[in-house]
Image (cartoon, rainbow, N blue to C red; front, top):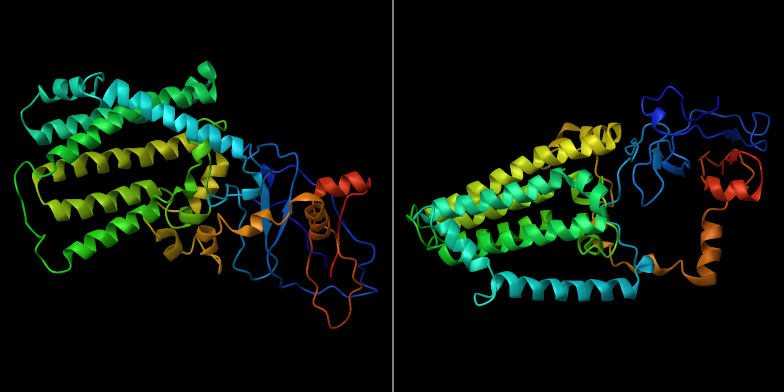
Amino acid sequence: MATSVPLTHPLFPFFSKPKFLISKQFSNSIYPLKPLVSKPFKISLPNSRNPFNSRKRPLLLLAVGNTEGNEILVGEDSAEFDLSKQKISSWVYFTAILGVALFVLNVFWIDNSTGFGKDFINAVSSISESHEVVMLILTLIFALVHSGLASFRDTGEKLIGERGFRVFFAGVSLPLAVSTVVYFINHRYDGIQLWQLQSVSGIHQLVWLSSFISFIFLYPSTFNLLEVAAVDKPKVHLWETGIMRITRHPQMVGQVIWCVAHTLWIGNSVAVAASIGLIGHHLFGVWNGDRRLAIRYGKEFEVVKSRTSIIPFAAIFDGRQKLPADYYKEFIRCFSMKNTENKGKNGQKQREQKYQHPRKTPTAESKPTYTYGRYRSQKKKSNRSLPWTVG
């Protein structure tokens, strides 16, 4: 009995139909096939009818028998950072763009003598003498502009391009964010004092620990700094690994933890108003973000959604998400030197050896396990279909 990819698999229509052929050297006369229990293996399928992203080909992860990795990865690796693909010129451009952006922001917004930031704050403050009301209004203005522009991203990119829209989006959102943050810092101890816990033993350490945890959820593995600065063409990504295994909306979770910790520490009405505004904005972002991903990716997003959760660890407890044994590597591998080992002529030889099919003759003592290779490279070498071998 041979094992192959079932055509009746519910997710099979996402992929083009590759041609698989059982190798001639593996037959019942040489080695009787038995039900296989093997580790998961990976194959790359070309010419996907619905490409999951424009950065790389879709990756199909299959498992034979009772294994824990029985899933199809349709999203991107949120912890990916290939050092060998980084260009010094790109990071020079990023540094230059960041410096120019900060200079322009300071001149036209932050500096009281030349910028409009102070006039904007005074105009909003004239609406009410209550710092709580002003704080909520500033947060609401930022939320409307930020989420509103994000909702019209597809239309904007068609009009002025991906990089042009990113520059416009950042140019409008960043000044409003700075004004909101600066107002909160200047008035964080104003308003009505609701509780005072700063003298309680351990509360200071709890706030620091909570802030640290919040930045783990805000871990920049889900961001591409070169895309943020429009050095690389910005894209809407469907992340699936890393922190996304714990929660599908890590920025919301991190912001909630940060708000609760600082509100607990400050304990006044201004901090409560700021937290209500920020948490409300991020909860709306959860709904709006899922809606945008569903429109862009369709069934692929539904697959990712089915095995992830909004509430941290909920999908893991439900059994819909299983963490790999080496899950920690998805956080610490970004600057791993392994990313630079396949460079130059020696690296080319390593890659050829890595994806070369082993031609071992099976023995009675050996356990049958599937090996894999790249379809495109095999197609160039011969006109035969992709062979499957057992080693």
